[in-house]
Image (cartoon, rainbow, N blue to C red; front, side, top):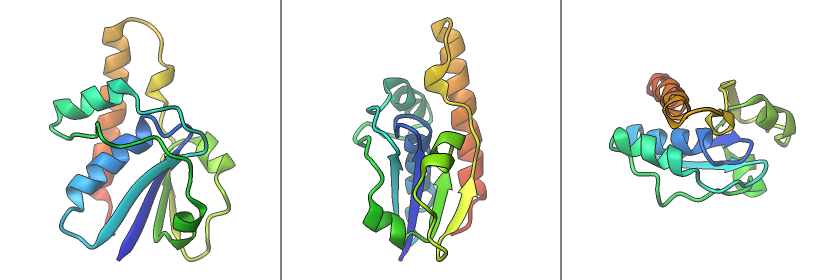
Length: 135
């Protein structure tokens, strides 16, 4: 069984989106997929909304801190921002590590239209990267 971890700063947007898509695209594979943060900021409602636009329900996911035991057992660890990469525990030598340096849509300011546009751009980039993953 493959174990995959998506990690970003607050486990509120990017890693949650990645977890949602990975669970969708790897549903028929023997894999455990989780996400976590170096902090917890709660599940961002905008992330839930933009995933619903793509018919992926992440509303029941939770914002969690990195679980050291699960982390040590992972086959693949994906960090989705520089902060997570820099503050993440040392990646086990038995794990493959990918780093996707994606902007944090939760930090975007301006109109709701502008904010949601950035959320969609980040969502679409994550979706594309998940579709390209082989586990």
